Amino acid sequence: MSIFFTPTEDTLEYAADDITDLREYCTGVLPLNGRLDPWMIELLRDPQLPGLLVKHGSPLNLIASEPMCRNVAELNGVAKNRDLDFRVFFARKSNKCLAFVDAAKELGMGLDTASENELQQCLDCGVTSPDLICTAAIKNESLLKLCIAKDVCIAVDNRDELEVVSDLASALSRVATIAIRLGGFVHQGQKLLTRFGFDVQRDIELVGQLKNFFVKVEGVHFHLDGYDADQRVTAILEAIHWIEALRFAGHSPTFLDMGGGCPMSYLEDGQQWESFWSEMRRALAKQRAPLTYRGHGLGLFATSGGVIGRPNCYPYFQTPTRAAWLASILDKVLDSHSIADRLRQTAVQLRCEPGRSLMDGCGMTIARVEFRKQNADGDWLIGLSMNRTQCRTSSDDFLVDPILIPTGQPCQTMSGYLVGAYCTESEFLSLRKLNFPQGVRRGDLVVFPNTAGYLMHFLESRSHQLPLAKNLIIDHWQLDQPH
Image 1 (cartoon, rainbow, N blue to C red):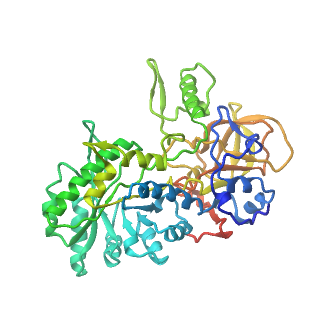
Image 2 (image 1 turned 180 degrees about the vertical axis):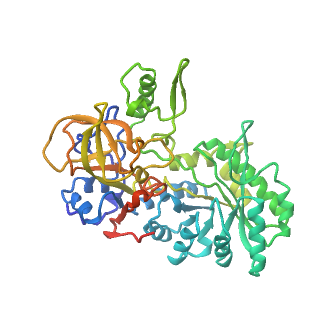
C-alpha cells in the first residue's frame, strides 16, 4: 500500500481489525487499547510513514475528514427516524483545520464558531449566515460587529452582552439576530451550576424586556457540562417553556440548540477502563505498584480514610454514545409524550453542536523519539519531539495506549514514561507507565490515536518559540492552511 492512498468508504468505516502487530511494541502497564479507524491502521503499517515526519516535522497531525460523514449520519438518522426537524452544527473549536469546514459545508451542516478568526474563516470559505452561529464565551465589539454585519446569529450570554449587541446594531442601522443562552436548570432538585447563560428562573423577566432592544430572537441555546442524558431532558423542557414565553411576547424563535457534550468512546474494551480505575485506587492505597509517574492520582487522592476524589479525565470509555445517547434523550417519555413529540408539537428545530464526537476517527498525532534516559530514581524517560499541549485538553492525562512504530532492530526491554519538549518538571506526555517489550530507540515513532477532537489544537502552544504541528490532510495529501 502506498502512503499516498485514496481512502474509500470501506476504509473509513470503523472495523475491529486484528491490530495485534501494531500494539505489541507499546502497552500500558494496564492496557487501554484505543479504537483505530481502518485508514489509521493502513497508514501505521506503511513503511513510508517515517518519511512524512522527515518532510513535515515532529509532531505531525494526520487528518481524515471522511469519518465526519459517518458520525453526523448517525445523529441525523436518529432524528429522521423520529420525523424530527434537526440540524447538527460542528463545533469548530474542537479542531482548527479548514478541511472540516469544507466537509461540514458538503454535508449540509452548520458551524458553531467561538472567535472572530473562526467566524471569518468560515465566511471566507463561503459559509452563509443561516449556517453559522457565534457562541464565543467572550465577544468583543469587533466580533459582534462582524456578526451583525453578516447577520450571523449570536448566542447572547448575559445582559451586558445583550446591551452591547443592541447598541452596535442600532449604530449600524441593523437588527441583530440572537439566541438567548440559558443556564441554571434545576435537575432532580439540584441546580446545575454554570458560568454561562441567563438563569432560567431568575431572569425570566428578560422575555418581556427584549422588545426594547434592536434584536430578533431566532432561538434559545444552552450547553451543559458533562454527558448526562437526563439533564438534557430537563434542559430541553425548560427551553421549550422559554420558547413558548417568547412567542407569547411576540417573538418568533425557530430553534432550540442543546449545545455540545455528545459522548464518544476512545477505547475498545469497557472492562479495561473499569480495571484501570480499580487498580489505580489499589495503587494509591499502596496495595500494588504505582501505575503513574510518582503515583500521580489523576484526580484521586489517598487519605487516612481511603481513596477519595474523582478522576480528572475524559471518560475514555462510556456508553451510550452518539446515536444511542441522542435517541435516549428524544425517546424519554414524560406525561405520555416523548421529548421528540414535545419538540414536534412546539414546531421548533432541535440543534446540537458536537465537536469531539464528530471528530471521532478523524485524526492521529505522530511524534519522533529523540532520546531515552534514566532519571535519578531509575525511571526510564523517553523524550519526544512534541510538547504536552499538542495532545491534551483539561484532563490530567490522555488515557489511551500510544502505538510505537519501530524503525530499527529490537533492543532492551524497558518500562517508562513519555516526556516532551517544555523545560518543566511537569512536562509529561503521558503520566501512565508504559511497557516497551522490544525496547524503544531514537528515531522510533510514537502515535497518539484519535486525537482530532480537541486534543490536537485546544491547548497547543508555542512556548520556547517551538513551531506548531503541521496538519496533513490525507484526503488529498496537502497541508491544511495555517492559522
